[in-house]
Image (cartoon, rainbow, N blue to C red):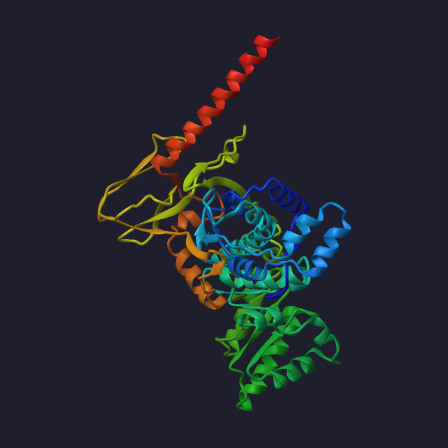
Length: 494
């Protein structure tokens, strides 16, 4: 999964464009931005993830003999181009935000600066990796926020869209805040905690529920969480669990971790009744775990109803991001670098959100110095510098009258895009997943509660620097003028 050659994990049109650049001898160096236009699930933020897989992909980017043989069989590409592919490798630069970073619409999460033939090939795979894991990490972050600090376990492998989505999705869920995953392969590959209990089939394979519970507790003395809803949760399941716990207590074999799991029914009511029964029996520290098609909205509702649940197992809705199954990241040309000159490029559209930001850019994040909360982000050119002892004016790039003035000494600033590859060589070392998770937790702490609420969250504003705003509007006006002149010209002809 880490070192597989994914060079042909691309859309055919990337290869046809590559052949075109090859044939016309286009060796221009270009800048492409990866960004997205709206937050998943109508939320107030997203979590960037998938960079480690991008790094592995770029490191291993090459065409095997069988790849070239396959392309030859398509009868699309000539031998000159196929010969070029034999020695193909990535020689450009990549800049990216660290995994686990809180991100917002329109700002570059990753930037590719390379010869156009190289930059074109990597588009599809980079988007596949960043889009998927950023989506799941964002969903996990929302679910964990709803749980208000209580543990969330990722339980979605069997409902994921295939092995890679299940395993890399579990990795992303851990980054987003989950405490463990049921996916053992993910645990092995990425050194993250794994967790699980048992299924209803375990109970049903024994003559009685009590015998099933007793044997399971004997087999797993360090963590006995018993599934209590196979037959009758309150009249059979919980009483039998309590009976087993009492026997273990009397024998001096009480598990370090123990509790029950609810997987059906009215989870609010059942958890409150179960908690009462466990407490009356003296098992105050018994965990009550819940599963059963949970998502952030249901967890939030159960919490508001006073549910006595302190561990959550979330599967389908998390691993598929069921209410918002795609992230929507795009890869757009922003500039051409020619003989030391940067030529900005812009894509126009009738839809304002689809108009791109031109040029070679950096993302600057401003924090309130006292609280550490994000004041706002600004997209600017790479050569712009902002120091904390100067006054900064942030303004909305559309409603320009909306302004925020940052007083010298009242804020801190950092650049979010960091160098990952320089001249084809990786200079960045990926961090362990649990370390990324800790970083992501700190990142979420820079958001206000208003940014994190599910309904109508307060947005974090992403503004443009004045030089970028000025260039963008100039380019839009120039294109508009060309369009108007073209209309006049056509009228004169007719």
